[in-house]
Amino acid sequence: MKPGPRNLITDVPGLLVGNAQDPALRSGVTVLTAARPFTAAVHVMGGAPGTRETDLLAPDKLVAEVDALVLSGGSAFGLDAASGVADALRKAGRGFAVGDIRVPIVPGAILFDLLNGGAKDWDENPYPALGRRALAAAAPEFAIGTAGAGYGAMTGTLKGGLGSASAVLGNGLTVGALVAVNALGSATVGDGPEFWAAPWEMAGEFGGRGAATTFPTDEPKPMKRTGEATTIAIVATDAALTTAQAQRMAVAAHDGMARALVPSHTPLDGDLVFAAATGGRALTDPVADSFALGHAAACCLARAIARAVHAARPIPGDLQPCWRTRFDPVDGQTTRNVFP
Image (cartoon, rainbow, N blue to C red; front, side, top):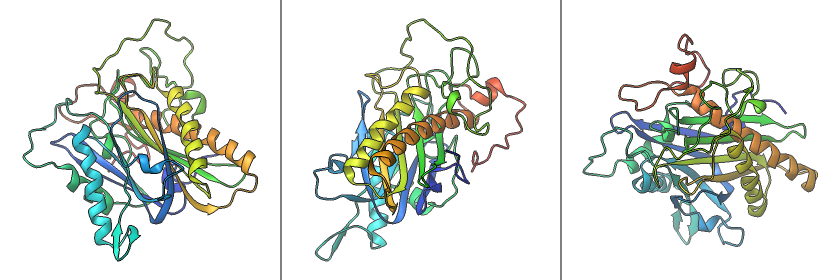
């Protein structure tokens, strides 16, 4: 297993990602889409999720494919980002055909960033417009760190952000992860710079500090209140999967969240993982390949979470320090994919 050429979820052929953010709002939206509909599923393990159109992703539901997946800040207000995406897709002639009408299928999930210091006194919900902007920006290359849905994200200790990672498996399949990290827990071990995800790091992608040598034994205390935390993610592959198989990949990917954030899946988090499968490559061995996809999805998600925190950059008014500011202040800020 090795990273793809971009080390982004868009190493899965056909996938595109777009970001849009508003610096005054201190929030943003990230959209994953493709030229044609793709299989999708979801699994929720947090106690405080905020979602749109996730029930239809169950394996027994009629519509098996979606046109886009949306990750957004803004709490419940951010759910309207998917409405903006759906409007733009409908205008482009995309969507599930019902007679001569097209209905774009756009599930979404949100995180809470309403108390991060941004201007939230809007007269009109800004998220539909941010959703349209993010869709219009969809491309193979995109920024991570302080961007898109992770623009105003925080964790229990350090500034959060948007992260992504990919892997090419020995069987030829590609897996990628995309995540907005706004967790109650911490991505780093104790007061040090080492990431919990260090054992899965590839090619120094989040600093190359290696694993911590000591670990905290005290019981963690919640650093946020109910509803203020959430890590929302997408894992994707070019494999041809059924909705049920994609859902199993999403379930396995949650292991990566638990490897990278401590604690995770708490009653105060809305932790959620979407799975997407473009269907470009058939499974040669359904058992072995599904096993490998689940493992790779978990590894990619752990790496993407660490990359999100590692890539976050400071902006005026921050309520938390960035990893770079605290642990690597002389870094030349040349990390690939970090900045717009």
